[in-house]
Image (tube, rainbow, N blue to C red; front, side, top):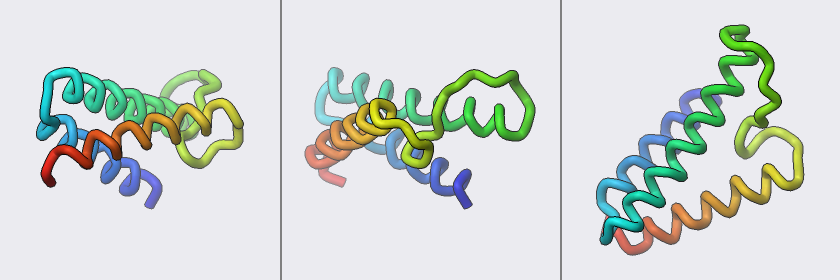
Length: 87
C-alpha cells in the first residue's frame, strides 16, 4: 500500500513537472519529484535488504522534525506549481 501511494505521488509530480508553465517551474518540480522518489526508494531498499543502511528517513512517515519540515515544504512548493499548470 505504501509503495502504491509513493508511486502515485511520484506520478503526479511528473505530470506537474511536464505541464509547468515555465522552465524554472519544470526543473523545480522535477527536482522535488526526484528527491522524494529517490528518498523513498532508498529507504524501502534498506528495509528489504537490497542496500546497506543509509539513515535516510521515509518521507511523510518517519519521525524527525527537520526531515518532516523539509518534505512538507517541498510538497507545498509542488502543490503551488500545480496550481498554475491548468490541470
